[in-house]
Length: 368
Image (cartoon, rainbow, N blue to C red; front, top):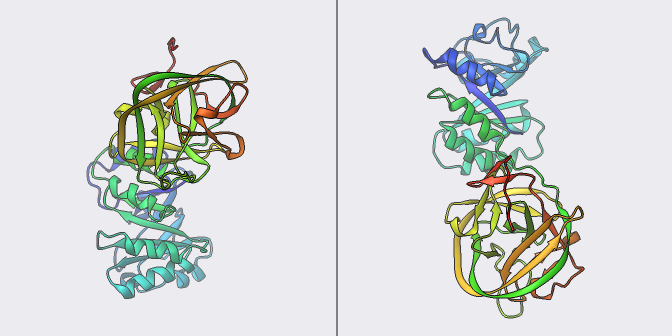
């Protein structure tokens, strides 16, 4: 879970409303320059004091973390920690050049908290700091200008910063920041499906989903004709005799098929486009969101695969009728779709709710 810190130091009349929104959405920390602004916050919130330049109180009653800028406060976190053993201290650094970048790397390795602000829009310096802090036990908090930048910061070098501090511009920003911090896809409970029948059904349009991601060998996307049953289609990561591997691609299925995206919302393969998000899933059910770079829709022969779940749920998948189009079985077994036969086992997923415009909904819906 990524940390979300709300900076209220410069808020005006909207401070109280935004603060209440932050508490309602359970943001992790509130940053103020006056300890009085933190006094009434519940104990579930990290109370972060970042004093004004040149000011440093003698006492830190009721404060969880104190951020120190040695250049403006004239003292270091280590010096304050000696005098106040019950308080955690962190160091603020603005990265503007190579020397301050080196200072940030050193802080990330040594400090309990490092609060970093990068002057330039490039994320290369942040990548360097994250790499330098790879074995550190401290926490790295990065200043973001808005929620969009916060989302990018959380994903830098895949690991991202441990947290983000952001000053909200309006009511609603606190909720959006928390949502960005929680944007991790949950694991899915995959099931073993028994193939009952395969059938060559003639021509139709199928979609190849080309992503901006290198899939692993045990990873693909879930695809199905019905919203309540899908089969795990593997990427073209595995070698083929007549063409090079394309580890970014999943030959996913007929254009009417569903696949999963964020928050388990379904999308038709036909509506995916450059910039869309789909959920990559491995054989253990671990997931991540990946970005679509292109979708290729072409007319091809199709094969229909019918399978059944242990509790009797029926699952159907229609794929391009070619042996190099593959699905995944238990323990990552790669199965050519045209060689599947009754009794074979494939991996799938059974969403528990029906769908309306892709969103889960509890209502009657018959698919066949």
